[in-house]
Length: 167
Image (tube, rainbow, N blue to C red; front, top):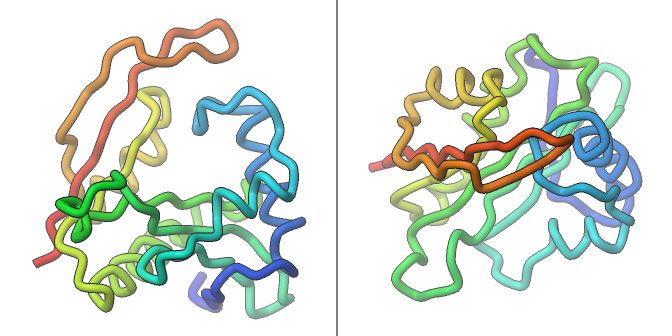
């Protein structure tokens, strides 16, 4: 599927994006949050005062529906990390396995290059095989493995960090 658009997140997108994220909170270990987010909490997560870090709604051009969101966020709040961003992609489960995740990562990498980022990171739950394979297919490599750092649904979880050098 290639008929999608990326639009900077605005208030009109928040309700639908919150629904998508809350699905992952309630049903998966993709995110380590336990409790559903409010729209205000999503705004705090998605909006930033630093113009280099942005969130984007993913729109299905055929029907105008918001089918996901992706972001480049600050990795650490220290000046030495200014050329490093952390990426995240979330897609409505009805749209999985259509190649959209790869398009989302391509888009984020293009945006990161425009902002002169050197390195992108992604944190991925150890049991999120789909995301691990996605990031590996786009040239990210596992650079860190934090053992038994999360517990969700009674399962002890590891956390992996993936990295890609852009230039």
